[in-house]
Image (tube, rainbow, N blue to C red; front, side):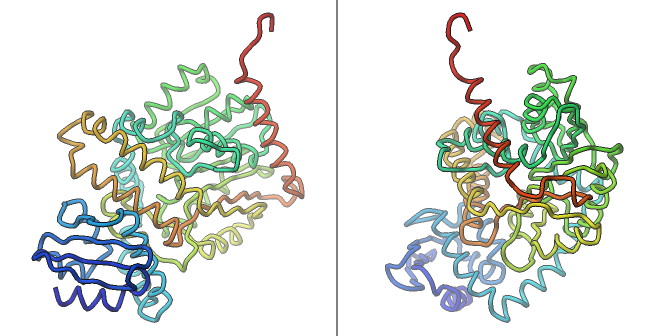
Length: 421
């Protein structure tokens, strides 16, 4: 226990953490009765050294295995406490050294050649769609929602996200749109239905592709939407608009220049592109090693300092930038509530595959990501960019006006019809 006790004595300055060892002895760190206040129990003495040497990996492993349990407070409180103290440590020389070491050591893990990119996507996105239905909204939006004062549910927030992105695309009927990483097809179908545009949606997930095609056929939109199993590096053609939501995180830092090279190649000269991606408010560093090992292999989250030079090198105009900040934390909180409410239904889908260990893994994933958006420096960037300086109006008013038009249109379409209308 000594190495771990020494580390925690140095590490925990904010919050109140009690660690109960395998013998039942309690060790307290931080400031008594301050928040967050958490007590954890370590059931296996073999944990002490791994937790001291590589906590970012072994805390998650221990929780999933059940050898680390929460005795007081919630898992979210525990992760918040860790991230609050990590943020302080990251400002030190030791924190700078740690980031540099992680960037060097983890560089090969984010080299995503085509075959590897496909395997990475299959790892997380090819569970059966019925699994995702148990915690996502009705439209199967698996990315950050957009909350506002008038939003009362996850479904409304995801509809608001689609309106918000559509408004930034400045669409006109008949345009050709490319949706890079189209997921279950919700955004592509929304754009086709509301604007009469022709959308090509590309994904590397076989399950998402099957579901998206099925939805397009059922909604009578197959003539406007073409979903393909395709890597962005092999896409050909020219598109008036390009949109990508929640896909850029899987590109990998070594491929950032390549991604924007292909976007530049595919975008029409007077075209508009919108990129929606998880971003990092802190200095550049790899994602949490447990998340990369278990949830998103090959993933890397950019900072604006990494994106801006690439836009400049391609002579792309950054015409609008928005930082959504806490919206993803709120989205993840909803996903976690729904997952927990449907935990038994998850188990029933496939008791051998979706066992207790899997459910703890998913719980740790959702809660640690929510904590990272609240206390760990993660955020969401929306970038709108063009090739030409005059491709869009010179103020942002058109975005708000179009968003309001869509909102009013949807309200009109959803109101009950009176006899004779």
